[in-house]
Image 1 (cartoon, rainbow, N blue to C red):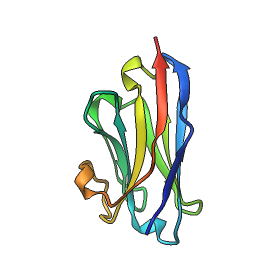
Image 2 (cartoon, rainbow, N blue to C red; image 1 turned 90 degrees about the horizontal axis):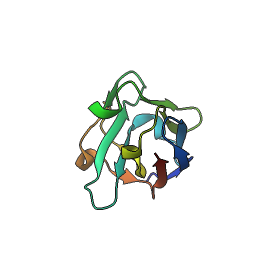
Image 3 (cartoon, rainbow, N blue to C red; image 1 turned 180 degrees about the vertical axis):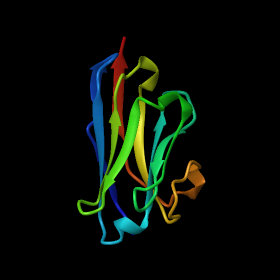
Image 4 (spheres, rainbow, N blue to C red; image 1 turned 90 degrees about the vertical axis):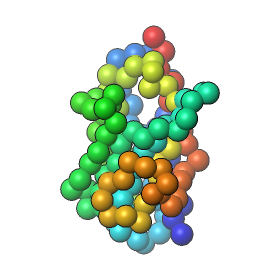
Length: 124
């Protein structure tokens, strides 16, 4: 069992930066690939970024490439999402998730555990 707790969300202006953190419980964190998803009001949940268990592979949705960076610290059982140049369309609840697959996964059905989410609001 893995429990995930996100933090770092907030209200920012367009162009600002935020860093989300996701702290995981359990001693097997390093064996999971991790991902970030988001869901805006009235929209489907969508993939944002993912990182393999070793941190060697990453994947991003097209609209965040060059602006968002996912990273992980296995010693701290934490995964991060650095978000730069934020846009109003980035406004959503952001969720982290853990997958038993070793490589970075883009599909939510590949994830086994989910956090409760953290709100990110970007004003124009």
